[in-house]
Figure 1 (cartoon, rainbow, N blue to C red):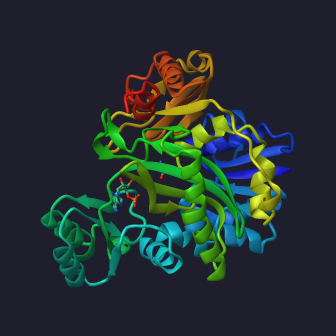
Figure 2: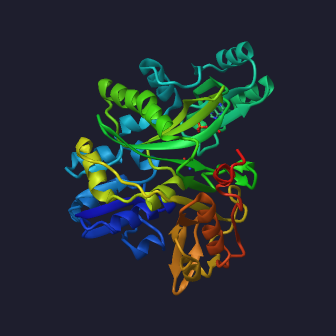
Length: 432
Ligand code: AMP
Ligand code: GLY
């Protein structure tokens, strides 16, 4: 098979790494890719959102499967365009990608199909949104309807904070069109986990759980980022709870979307809040994403024992019911190294050394997220730059290996959190 991966981050490196290992893969391309991806795929200088050029390239090279990493090209309709050209593509149509692209659509769909999620209201009029907040009181959560680069959610501790978030989005237009509508929803308490499933339009196949670390600083302090590290599995999500998530959240969503004429294909990424009351844990849906998480994907790929490629093709072709997946019992953990200043301003094109020594640590795999090569040197090209990942019998050992590798990397302009995996390590040590 000839395969094209779209994207340039750590998630796409992990997907390329897994697909390159498939005996079914004869040629692997990545657009646009990065310096790490170039070791396993041919990088093509086409941006992830250049839909016309991507379709032309896939046609020219007679690509058998296109795997789309990030949400932006999905929302732009890349999969629709590829399928119209007769090219199999893994990922949802633009209509199905609304599940991530519009929080209001997602909440209404959940309400119609009985998926457990926070009570909410949808507003286009700021005064109506303010009245709802005053009536409900705090804590309360204000979300822009559209994609706002992870900055559109305000978990407000006070009514004033919620009113300010409404003004920010709806009156001052801070998020542009994405904020012209807001969802205001009840605050949910508990612990967050991510769960992933492959979907082919009608059948869902469970992937695995993971836990992300969104805050930039140790101890979950500082502003939110795209994710500073992740590990899998998330011990909180027991096999029984996973089953419950499949039955109460994933299955009704898949059935509902098919019934409403927007069948979902691709990865369904459920952000969940697990609230444990009197020893009974109940999962509620916080959000859906229509793609693999980054850096969760890096941890998942390290644990996947099965060949990924035939399963992605089966998802694209509506044949998932015939597939199954095997996982390693080991844990996997990914620590993101980012450029100093991220998620604010940071310098690019700084030199990273010691990568070979880091990759030599037992159980370690380095995924590049934003790098390019200049001669022998590897340079940073973005905010999240490397995903130093490790597999081991326990999360604690995977954590030790990942940080041992990081200590061999010389990159004065970079930083990482030093506590990735702390919840799972505490659980392993019986502290929770
Ligand atoms: P979202 O993009 O919808 O996942 O929201 C981003 C983050 O805001 C989540 O990862 C949660 O930490 C938090 N959050 C979102 N919705 C709620 C809610 N209803 N209750 C409490 N926290 C929330
Ligand atoms: N790591 C969270 C995300 O990919 O959205």
